[in-house]
Length: 407
Image (cartoon, rainbow, N blue to C red; front, top):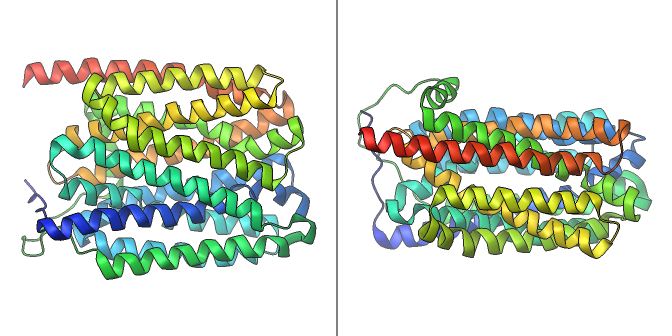
């Protein structure tokens, strides 16, 4: 059995965790800055809706490869060097995107940038390394909270700094700010985060990146959980990918309005993951928390698709985002508990890769439905997709109980 990681000295562990949460926050500012801008590449580069949603899909395709690679590599080389390298590469990607001369070059840059952004499993692995088992769900929820706060600041900043009337040059300031945020995050890791894995352990041969997917698929609990992640993110990413085009078509929104709405959903995500997720897991368990979150998301997205009122659509989006993000820490906690010893980083990476693969399919489905059916169709698709995800969560809980009884 591979040697288990050791917990750093308590003072250092207490410092590293908040620094990593700050890293997530700064990284998500960089990611959130871009989202309000992407739909308006349609006017700058005369791109069609499916080309715009392809930018979402390309980024997620890159994340799929990154999540397969970085979690496993961090299990072998350590969390710290992998984090520093991927964050610096992401910074370069934002600079390149700011000066992309065409939509297809921008799509290529987003794909490469996605590879280096697929490093959340490394941070999750570090948190698992230094956290007692009974506190894992709560601390993973703090990661989600940092995501949410980053989504508050990032989209607002992107919408506030963007100048679409200037053409491609109007997108330079927010993208260069995103690059700067990544540099700050890399400096934070280099200065304050020490390695959480043992350096004196004997070398152990690690399986290849696709082995983590096969390993997860062979286990009944992990198979259902990764399938659930895939289904949920196919659905929810369809809503996010089309949000800018939907807001423009439905209510005439521009980058500032989209940034404001995403800021509200970011607050909701921060509160639901940082405060409510861990509390609900302790009271009703991981599986029930996931089912509750997906059910609320389903109802609210259907309301958003049908309602003609701006205020009701925005409120439904806020609650839907809360439900979806509330389920994510509980999912990560279940996966880390079910993963083999020493393989938490790789298995979390496989689950994140499933989410990234879903975010390739979801935006493409959304683009086709937006163009061929109506602006409401991708939103309704996103809501209905939460039902099979909730069913898979229930099946996972049942299989987990059977596994515990057989042990």
